[in-house]
Amino acid sequence: MSRSPGSPGSLDGLILAPVADQAPGQVGTRTRFAYHEEDGRIWAEYAGGDVVRGHLVGTREGDRLDFRYVQLKHDGTTSSGHCVSTVTELADGRLRLAENWEWESQPGSGTSVVEEVRR
Image (cartoon, rainbow, N blue to C red; front, side, top):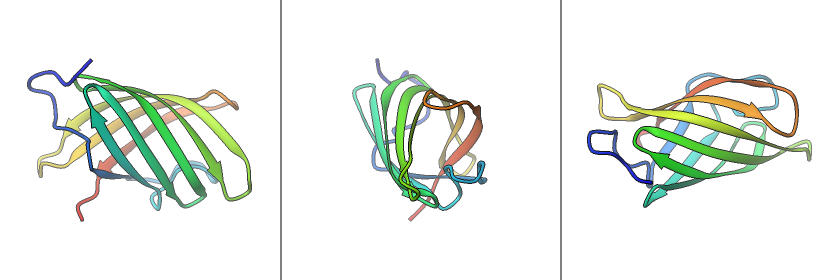
C-alpha cells in the first residue's frame, strides 16, 4: 500500500487541526494531530481541547486513509473508533482530510474536516 501517482503529498511531519468543533468532550479546533507516514503506513499522536492524549494508526492507499484511533480525555474516560478519510490538496498547497468516523467503544458517528496547520 502506498501513495499513487497524482495523489496529494505525504502527511509525514505535518500538523493538522479540525476546522470546526465536534460534540462536547471530543476532538475540536484546539486539537492538534502530528502525522507520520512511511510506505503506506500512517500514524499520529494528538492532544488538545478535551483530549489529553490520542493515537491513530492505519494505512494509506492513494488519497484514502483507513485507520483506528484511541483517546484519553481529561475526565479519565477512554474511547476508540474507526475512520476513513480522503486526502485532498487545497489551492494554497496545504493538505485537507475529509473524514468519516464511527465510534467502536460507544454509539455515534459523523464527519469532520482537518487541515494542515502551517508553522
